[in-house]
Length: 221
Image (cartoon, rainbow, N blue to C red; front, top):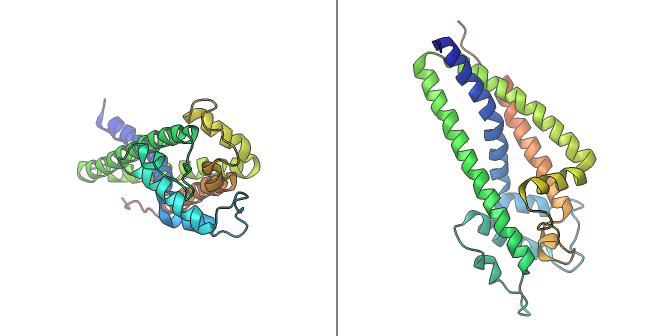
């Protein structure tokens, strides 16, 4: 393989890594207390018909988020009790949260690996004499992300139910992610929560991609 072919291939690798890095960076931004507060304070966010106040939703959802990010086992959630002594989560919900944690941890590992790979390529390009090709790859990656996120945002807006079901069918076993409206997970995270979450991922990724596609300046030969 010639040097020019290798550089071109590595630049295209950078292009393909960009959407992964940007989308998963957006996912990580959403896995914060700030996003929970943002969601629950949105105008028109549906109240819990079974009685959770906004403060209670914030309290219990923060613990669920902590579980996804910490190294603790499912007893972290399984030991939780309401004031009347009843468990916060039933067995089906706990099983699903184990699955969600596995997916979340896998996604974060992919993000770290993609981010590290993009950084290594950048250092290599800077010192290897193919910096312009690398920047071109980043710009292409930004444009690719813009296209992908544009499609996803439209799909979420016009057919969220179809998208939501498809997403769960890809990442979870059939039937393990369906719950009663009275279950805690649905009371904390109704469909509206996830619709806003996916739109937010699309918008954040789109904003970063626009910057990458149009603000990066390649050196003038």
